[in-house]
Length: 514
Image (tube, rainbow, N blue to C red; front, side, top):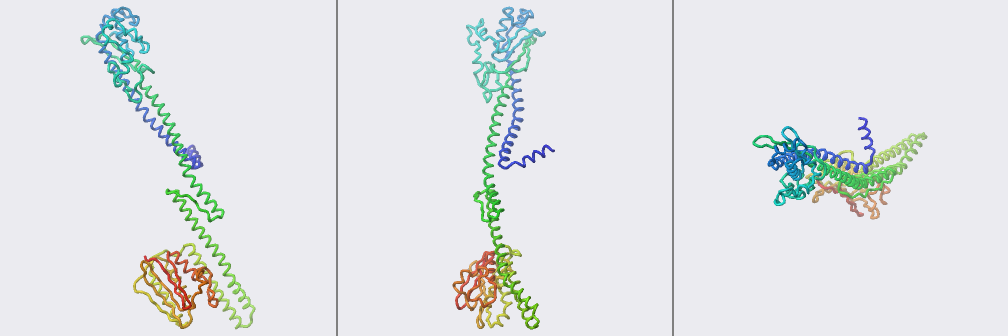
């Protein structure tokens, strides 16, 4: 277990650029070993059976060619001596006949008497004197009995002169001279009979070791192909690792830059695979992070800037009230301090809401919402205020639903801000209209007033935070209401439009219908 654990730890420390070539090469090597483990036993078994078949075919051929020899006379002439010494004409002729068959079959042939006495031995095939048997007596006239060693090896489809099958045939390992190379240690015997009585025993051995030759050739080819495959796999793995690690290194460099504070950095990886998707996700994350951090920075800066004045005024009023002995003056200072506290509370609430909207987050999920119902709720909440201000409130809402996908509380806040501005900037005797309608596939809600209007110079920055028009300095406010309306429309995929003149203003909220 410790060895496996150390191996896994070492592999885990490798870089991807190293792991891929090593993995590819390892897979190729494993495939090569498995192939060799399967191929070598199969070939060994196949060619082993082929060698046995070759010997059996050679034994049948030898029995046929040597059946015409008078082996009883040869045994009597040899007198038990080795036929290789050419003791007598019978023995010499028998020896030439045996050697001819040995050349034809490429097997060493030894003939024994029934009692086991060696009569004739052809000797190893490679040691046979071919010229000594080609012009043997009785063969000068009969040219068709002449044995041509090379022709007998080369004619036919993988067969010798006598039609013996070649274990290697004409395939990948065939075509060589069967007399070349190592010799087999397999032995086979067959009996020669006359009148169903055994007169001699033929022993065939030292045939071509085709199994060794084939396996050696196979192993060499397997080794060369395996080494080439491992090297090629390692090369492919290295090329793929370069293609994979280059964009990953680019993403890593970009993330390091972001970690050091550069929020503008982006990856330039353009690919259609998973790494391209990763790069795209990284860029999207970077955009959102930059936007979020920017919103937080703006929130801190705005809070520090805008809260400073009311906090100072609050602190001053409280200090004056603390040292004031006149009860009426103390009550006035405390009342003014409370108004400053309310201003601070409203300002902090608006800043927090605007900060959430800037980061694209809302405290509740987006659900199907009826804008007509929201507009009616807002309209129902302001009649008394409009009546006290001497303003005519007009509600023009359809009976049908205008359903959108949105954050109901946020949309209601946006509408309330528009209505609050309309009532605030409309003098007595004027009117404020709240209406809605469907236009194509868009829901439109508007707030129209006959107030003081917006100066053309203020229209460009109208929805910027803390922006207040040049003609509204006498009115209370913090300049965040319209910024909240614009941010709310942005996160809902909608838009806000404004038309204004000295006779009044008209604001429209547009959102796609669900």
